[in-house]
Figure 1 (tube, rainbow, N blue to C red):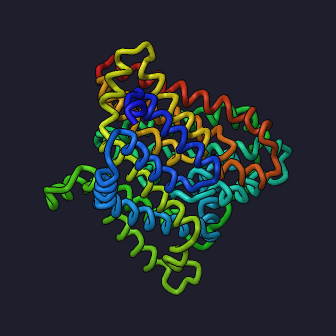
Figure 2: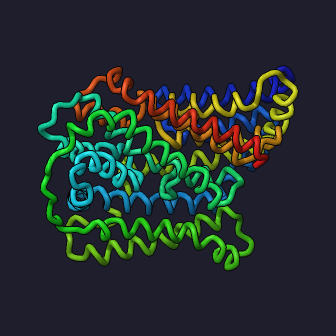
Figure 3: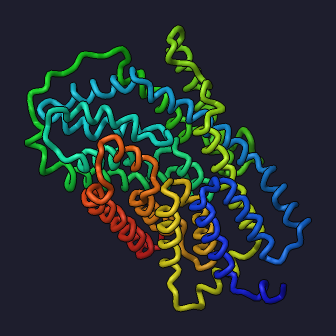
Length: 433
């Protein structure tokens, strides 16, 4: 036992991290792997079983955990609403009205991006048929169609507050909501620019034609998007009032309470707008495999974070790295990238790695802002290149495209975003932010 406790804290944390990824590859649900990892790291810190179980009970008792789970269930309900055929058609019609001669090119961006405003497991499959319809009759490679749908589907996930990875990141990093959005929204602009330059630019002439604008098909775009914007506005504007209303609450709980208020209002609006519409039936997917999988994953993230903090290993690991020849920035970039590549989901790179990198950054006096942009961009690069990513798999299957061929289109876009993350990290460190 003394031998195991004498092992380097950095090595212990890395071993547990790798074991979590191995369990994921072995098809164990990520949420369960994270809980086992949390229990393991606390035990390996030298605590006895009653102390570990007490830490586990404390993690389960966090109000942030349960409010996060409730919020994610409500967000998924909005996602199922967005994915209905009527709403998808409204997005397609709006893009064609707005685009004029370049309506096809605009549709290729707007359709997957708009459907991507709400998190849906495998959500790229909902936009793929509309992308295919937009370029019907045009001779373009199947791999290019898959890359376009896949890339633009994820342009908002860096900062859009409805995404589980954003909610979890805000709960792990000690950073203000507005500061988080100001930093992360730049990635969306870089994504759009990279997608235009590497994917669309050379085919604008092929895509341009005199497509007649479609008439409105049932729902209007404003009706479709209004519930989403209510949630976003509540998330941005209500944390201050929530903090005054519940003074004992943490900053994370204030953010989650604000989002909960916006979600309730949005779902009430959806129920009122959809009264009598058989396609609008809330909570019919409450016990679906997709919903339960997301819920258990997020619960596992919060428990792992709490158990890692309770272990006390992070400060020791940070001091050890500070005295070593390995730059802590290398660890902060590598862990999320590896986790994203192995798991293929955003919450998969944030859950195991962000609690670790935040602790290491604090121990080595790196700012939260510079750590955030580096860790998130590297994790996202790994996720977008992962052959395990469900959106990627489903998009390739829909368009009958080969994995290697699609990589040729995606890699320049991914490298551009990764480079932007590194540049932002260096800039923020230089400015002392």
